[in-house]
Amino acid sequence: MNLILKYNIKLRLAEYEDAQFIFRLRTDPNLNKNISKTIGTIDDQVKWLDAYKKREKAGLEYYFITEDFSGNKMGTTRIYNTGNHFFTLGSWVFLREAPHGYAIKADIITKGFGFESLDYINCRFDVRKENQTVIKYHKLFNPSLIDEDNLNYYFELSRENFLNNKLRIINLF
Image (cartoon, rainbow, N blue to C red; front, side, top):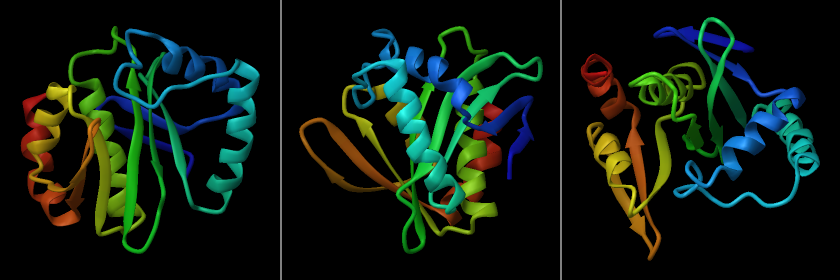
């Protein structure tokens, strides 16, 4: 698996040459308010990608760069912490200039890959409590709230709820 084309979006696996783009997204103060903090340099991002590529090769993690069909990079999304019947979804960060609904569609493609191609039963993800827009979006799938702390809500989405709601949500965007 190197490329997924769907909904006018291209998802491809992250490569070393994406380090600067990833670092720019993750350190942009307008984009990183609701994700884990990134510290260091672009060289540190390259080192992280080196370790990631080993996890990717082992089938443990998939870090996607999303692009339009002209090759313009728009954002990132990732499947990681794969376990017994579940995967974790994260690293969901997109440029502000991404077209309306682009990040939503990329999220749905990524979840679809986890459920339909990798055959996992559940998807786990966390959302910062202050990120009400994203919470509202995720609740459209009817996930279960499995935990919370001062900063985050922790959700689990079943494959059944994803498949039952996917087309309805795509049509909203």
